[in-house]
Length: 132
Image (cartoon, rainbow, N blue to C red; front, side):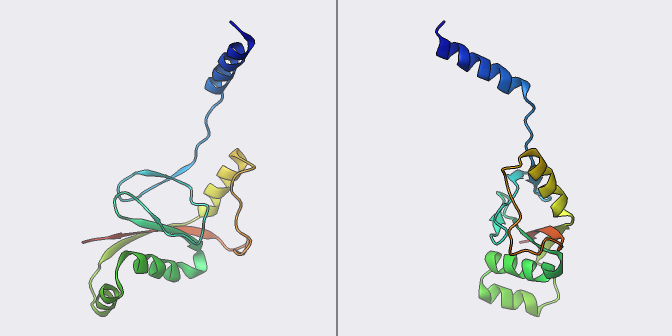
């Protein structure tokens, strides 16, 4: 066996022995796994149709509104806001910072919290899914 093949075999063995530290978030509606969002401005979409976003705990209502604007047209939103009926399910996962800390500890070169967010403001993960 030549040296390059031996090196490749050793790398495979070492990678098998090293525990894989993968952190994901799980959709509360369908239990699909997704990577931890690193773009806190973006609205992300699950395969089940739910949308999710990271936002500060003091702007939860704004975050839900931004997701709603992504899910419904302006005309639909006007109607939804005018009637006292539930049109969606909302799940707020508090202490999102703890998950970011776990990921940061596992991969120090990975994600960092964006500087535009106050480091002292707790982050939450908001999920919204249409009922119909």
